[in-house]
Length: 232
Image (cartoon, rainbow, N blue to C red; front, top):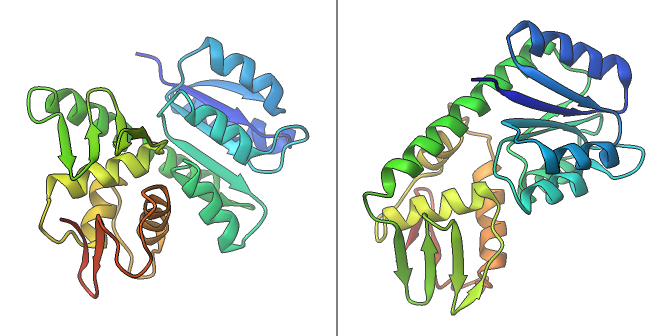
């Protein structure tokens, strides 16, 4: 089965380089130099992964990422010349799965692509298997359903990114038990956790915002300092 990969990068040399490496590994590549062109194709074709440049001539990569997340859950890797943590956190919290800073080694990009595709495949397999198991949790008005991929709080639907949904579902599966940042990262992202990785913290913070959690006494996602997080 073909694996379709979307590249949206306005620097032609970079887009061409990525295309060569991806095609050499057997992927089907759709390459665009502007967000407007890419949006038309996104509506027409089912992709398995997207690589988006942050700085595009028309729609910036963050807006394009948000547009994709309105309908689709495939992995998104952001490319940027910026190195600020705020840009990285912005990308991750609006739904990006990974972030690569230019200049980069093409082999690193290929490794990240393969990791994200493995995670996406494993997530889909687990989702299909879980249909026969528990499909919904209702925790004091917080309802999350894996079959419909929806989450509501006191009847009001929440807009969660795929990563946020996965984290919340995982915490619900371990309701009442502490889940470490390491376990969350390795289970959801499918990669080895590093001590200085703040990705989980950033996603938890964003989740709490959407759940309208009080800062000092959160009702749902609680921090167990030095250990991890839990839902009670």
